[in-house]
Amino acid sequence: MRSLIVALALPLAACGGAGDGLSSAGSSAATGGASGTTGIALPPPAGSTATQANMFDVTAATKFDAVSAMHSLSVSATKSELYQGNASTADSPAGSISYDPRDGIFVMTLADAKADITRNITFQDPGHRTTADSGRVEPQVPLLAGFNYLSVLDGETPLTFFYQRPNSVGSFVSLAGFERNEKRADGSSTSEQGVLVFGTRTPLFQTPTKGTARFDGQFLATIMAQRDDFSERAQQWLAGSSAVDVDFASRKVALTLSGTVGQTFIQNGPVANTALSVPAGSTFNATGTASWGTFSNAFSGKFAAASFTTDGKVTPVDFTSVSAGTSTAGASSIDGAFYGPDAKNVGGNFRIVGGIPNQRVDILGGFTGTKK
Image 1 (spheres, rainbow, N blue to C red):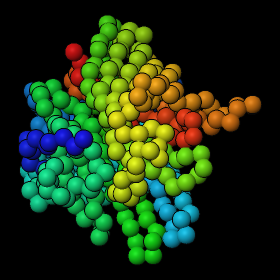
Image 2 (image 1 turned 135 degrees about the horizontal axis):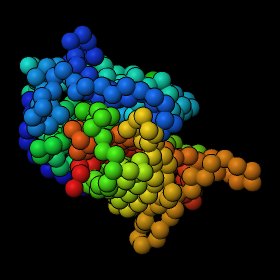
Image 3 (image 1 turned 60 degrees about the horizontal axis):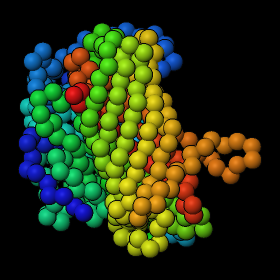
Image 4 (image 1 turned 60 degrees about the vertical axis):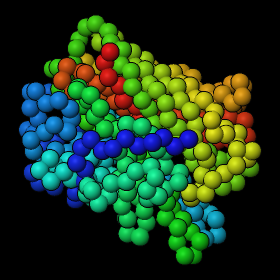
């Protein structure tokens, strides 16, 4: 069910791309990931201040690297399909969000060849601001409390961008999503959806080296589903809560996700629940682990289990890797980093590719959390 959108708390917009004069707030504090390759800790971005209240409380135009998980589906006039998806890593982001406090302008820049998505979109408040009852948000976009929504025309095609606004002091990471569905006169179409996590990365020297912490937050994902009869693919949004338990001494992360599946659509057209293995209202649960190396605070890992529950029946997602004697071609990944001074926040993306009875699924999403 669509939630009522709370009024915008910040002036919004997006501007041109990562042009000159932007200070980087999303760059990794050190190169390398869980493999332990060496790197150099970077100082806080030029636009930040020692007492800034949240990630947007900057004094200069700032670019935040975006850890993305997104996919595209192109359908020809003869109904041939090309599906492409990818989840980037914290140290190799495939996009950015730029914010200029002087003009209140945002820009979403996406460049992911594996997902076949390249966008550079400007958002300007109040012209692009929208609300739940405006009619400007595409039907299949999830409307979530605590998120800001902006809608523009990308050429002649509507594009909706929505992001989690900083709702408290100490919010240095944001969860965001976007939706673009293009229909052409010859009957062909292209759909693009994805989740972005962006914010002010914690410098390596500010990452704790001992103790444990619990980060509670939210997650957002988009599911591309295909039945075993290879009928047309459908798309669903999935949202819920995340819990991240971190042991800084051993550099280990445990991720737990719990959420609810939204309405299913094909090019903004609703699909009846009776045609689905995972209908709207089903719950989703997943657990996984990750770790990071000595000279990095970007972690990576994979899931141990994932499942959907419908009417009390639990259906595990089989994401076993390709191996002899099995028909499954599955995979999973978790990638993330710490955000804010002294690792106040955590954020990252994830992917689960697998199967359930009568259906294949590709789940691409992101999560954020605040230290308790």
